[in-house]
Length: 295
Image 1 (tube, one colour):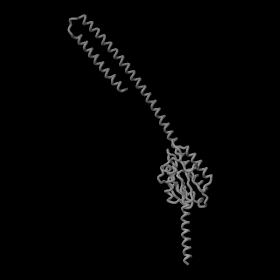
Image 2 (tube, helix red, strand yellow; image 1 turned 90 degrees about the vertical axis):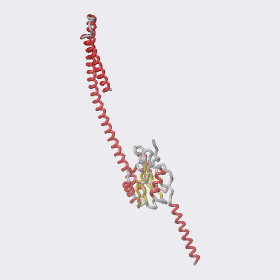
Image 3 (tube, rainbow, N blue to C red; image 1 turned 180 degrees about the vertical axis):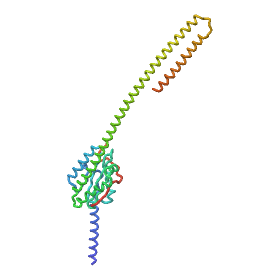
């Protein structure tokens, strides 16, 4: 009787140990760096078609301005919180490009029947949490039937549609901005030409007025010189005369000349014053955005 109890206890202990050991085996450690194709799939759940599809998408996106990048990790089981593990993997793998940080990781735990779409902050502009949830829901039927490749192909096709739509909209906005910029530049050029024409007219008017002023000054100076010559002639003719009307006339002429010269200089002064590179798997910015689901 005692022997049977001991055997039962030993069997339970062995079973417990084996069960715990099996859990340890099932719980996998994901490598710190991503595979070249961006898919970690040690148990070959996904087909080559999925791998080719993802590689093609990432290559195409790497040539765009935003450079979105997608990675996939699918394992038997994970030991720990799915969201925490997904965030750590995305950070370690540095999904995305350092100059844009548009990264996205899909983490799948088959035994727990869970999926996590981890989104970087910038990628969240294209794929917000609600869209990530819809992507997770798209795989449910195929994953329940253990057709993981079909599920992931549908998932990637939806992502492709979303990103292409976003990139097209972005391109259209850029083209619109460029068109508006061209219109703005053309308008500036028109305004500059009109301004130059106006300045040309103003310059011609100023030049004409200046010529008239110089002619007037020349005539005035010539007149004053003649008056001065006449004064000296009169002085020689009447040397004993006091500085009377002739002198007064001379001084008046001098004052008139000085006054005019001063006025002209002032006008001339006023007039002059008035006219005087990055590589892939180097991204970041994963702050917990995304969505989790199950099937």
